[in-house]
Image (cartoon, rainbow, N blue to C red; front, top):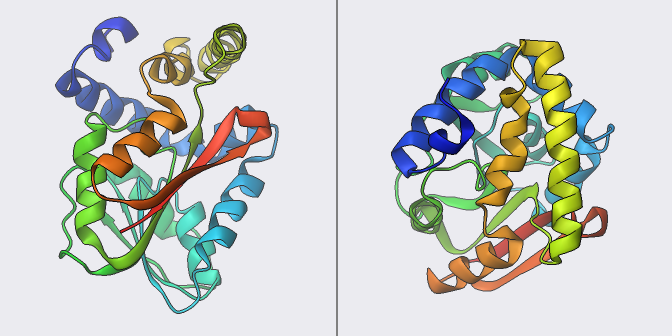
Length: 235
């Protein structure tokens, strides 16, 4: 893989890098999300699902990974489609034993293969930070939501305080490098998290872009003292 600096320089370079990266880590994706969050990942995702109030809704979970949020939404009473750009992620999600039904498909969140105004709810976990073109993806999500439909997006945040941000990114760099080396023989594998955050506008920037694209009531629910966040907004 190219160096992280080169890989994230342009949307097209990031698109290629992210697809290769997530194909590489797909089989260890559940493990690493638990390790990096010290087991709190499930709690954050459940908070998102509770805010979504999914019962009776038609939901689309984009960048669904191995299906955690999609399955939780379905368990909460939603009719759910899970979408990810990485075929291996979708294959793993489809193979998971689960008492609820979710329709999984391979697709790009910058060009959603679904009809306009066809969902009451769109969710994503760690998707907006990884997408090559944030505005394009948010516009697509706005397109597929019905009037009154809601977006909820969980992700690492980029603390506005410079000192805290440096400490946080430094920690993620060290920990990510260690896990990347141990699990894949490549420290860049999970060092990508800190590198992507360094170029991410943070939850406040996402909120502002949502407002510009026509989302109403756009806001932020901080988690873990502001180191994680859920962005939300209504069409």
